[in-house]
Image: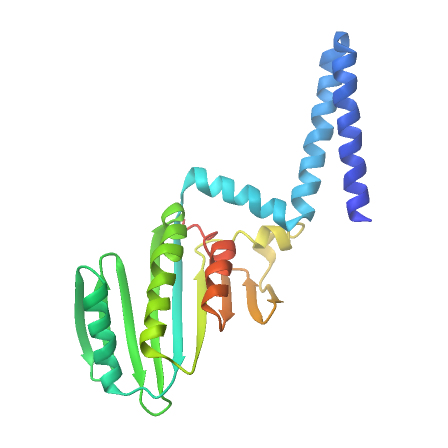
Length: 239
């Protein structure tokens, strides 16, 4: 029903455009009416179709190139010990440039590789190796290539080295203002009056949670993390 109504609105707008060209002597009246219907059709389309909404958002962010703030965490399960931390250190030193290593403790290390700060934590009891990036601030256009070209390829190579039994990948975004999806899902509500808002949906076996000030993505696939991060997380402008 929704698609039929929006299709009807666009049909009326198209007919008005045709009439405006045919009856050019009344261009002022016809043009004003046509413009109103076209704007109404665009508003209805953007309000009810997520793909169109996100497409326009991506164009806007490409132009304005805002700063994005996001956190990334990878948890590997396997037969890990303190020698694994040394293996990780050697891997970064051999495969990355300008690496600075800080030994926080026997089970925790901090690696700085240019603009990337990566903390590695070993839970000896649970046999868990956790990699964390906290509150990384990066421009929208650069974040897309950073996720695709550097971060994803880095963990693909690291997985081959560590050979974990399983892994979990989590992305979390905290917004200084309302996140860009808030306007789409509760467009008819006054954002200032909404105290709590949360939408959780699944894409295959992955979980996406959209809140008033936060987006979370949870998946066990690095490939899914790449695609979902490009689709959702880069739309996170910092004010």
